[in-house]
Image 1 (cartoon, helix red, strand yellow):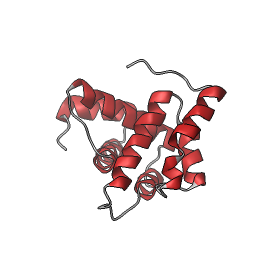
Image 2: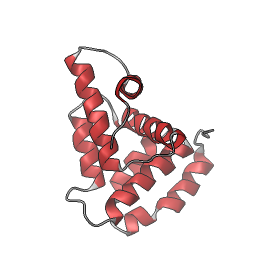
Image 3: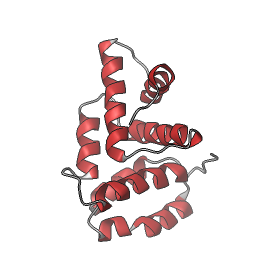
Image 4: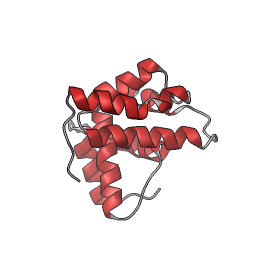
Length: 141
């Protein structure tokens, strides 16, 4: 999938397009803008915000999407931007296989990737760890 790098005009449009996440109390303004700022492409923005919306709109989640994401990021050596890139990679990898995932399952899988890299003392980007795990083990979720 071709992904467009975000410029100022795109940011304004995307902010307007996804403001409902704030209005529906899925994210507060600070959370919304922190996530938006960490995205480098329009695809990353739509991917992460759609997963957040799906997570929150079911009404069955015990933990908020933002809290789930931030707790796992805090427990890892990788910043939010790396997690977003990796979530985008996973979603695109699954789409090629005509599959999908939830935010919770994606975060859980990425946490396993982080743990695997830590246990093996591998200094690699999160997306590279993810790619390796997908190649070796696939994705059952």
